[in-house]
Length: 386
Ligand SMILES: *Cc1c(COP(=O)(O)O)cnc(C)c1O
Image (cartoon, rainbow, N blue to C red; front, side):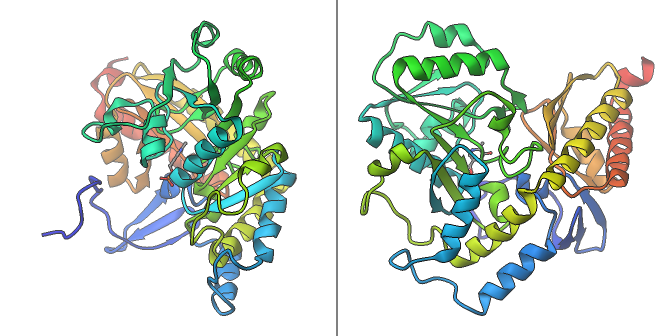
């Protein structure tokens, strides 16, 4: 029997090694990987620069605690703030911890209680972030929930405008919902969010855990819009597979996170910082991000022409977070693709989510589209008639 809690229903694949866009399983079968550890390995698996940076740090010092000065933390924090609207960084170890810190900071700074989040959001699995997540299915059996969270429909400016409540510390959202179905926010909705925050004197928290670190072709996804978050939260892509999380906040929030107010033993650990330093050097580069945008346009265009079939309802997303919404359950397509050596994950029952490494090549994109098309045709009876 397995000695693990069965919190995941796992695929029937055991990975032996991984490099760039590819995984190899224990039987030597190769997979083109458009999951990348769920939007984590943005530079592909075992990226050389990141691997070398972590290896070099391994021989120097791993961990001494935040009682000491960490020049690497300053260096990574500087880059995160230079490429965003924030000024101050707090490092932690995961996405949920980053959102947890953001929620604590917002309440402490504003001295207000309520946080507004949106339907189909995903913010994590700890008590605060589970409460923030407006999806009933992840909360079943875990009550009572943390108080103060209010859920409004995503992309519905009117509901927000007519919301009566007060004492609002923050509005928290993903500008492209990842787990919830690859749902991009509409510009008019984001304008309404901005106005709402101004009127209610509430902080704007953008959850960039899945969309940040170049995933959408800009350093952070909110930069596609006319927004300036008070706090943004990061994790997944920041360490390219090394566990790390962070919040980036405006300097006005500095007094709320004073010595002793918040902390974590491992946060900002030197190995994680070495990884993040290498990642941000590579990704916060105009040429690199331009290349991501061009390859993304190529992929989306190609998907739209090749998947012009009755079972494909829409293709949406930005950069390299792309959803293919189907009219049928997609599980059979995913399994067919696995057989064919191509990995993707769902975002809900009907959406195929593509998260290629930002370093993907056009040839790999071509292979991916061909395989998706073949799999969709193979499992569907509708398309072949059409
Ligand atoms: C993955 C994710 C989280 C949670 O991050 P963990 O590292 O799993 O705790 C939170 N928000 C978003 C948008 C995510 O995609």
